[in-house]
Length: 137
Image (cartoon, rainbow, N blue to C red; front, top):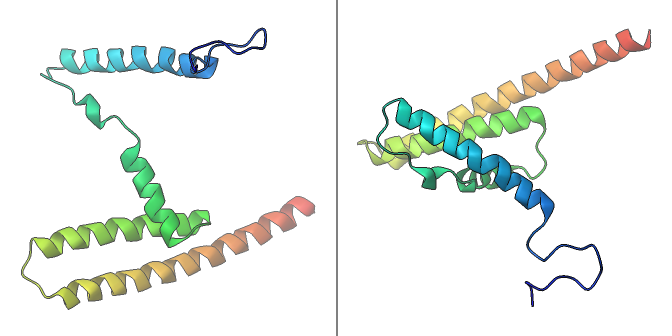
């Protein structure tokens, strides 16, 4: 049923929209060119299975779980915090430290990042007021 054309004249078949076809026309030659470039550079193989959006979407999901509506400043701070947290977790697995020590490092870094975020928010507000005054005069 999904492969049959729509009843309305001028409609394309289901699953064959023009934007999807355009995306394929752009991405397939780009992928082929990239792979050829890597082979010409001396690589023996290219791991194309790593070319997906899952890691990126997972990162956005983690950031949205911290703050569902982040500003630019808080977005940058959350990225730093999440990156630091993952590195500390890796370091704790491969080191001989107590669990509390890693948490203390993370808490002190979080306090530092919060302080920096507040300072950046104040600076952004100051710049905004300055620009507003300059543009209105």
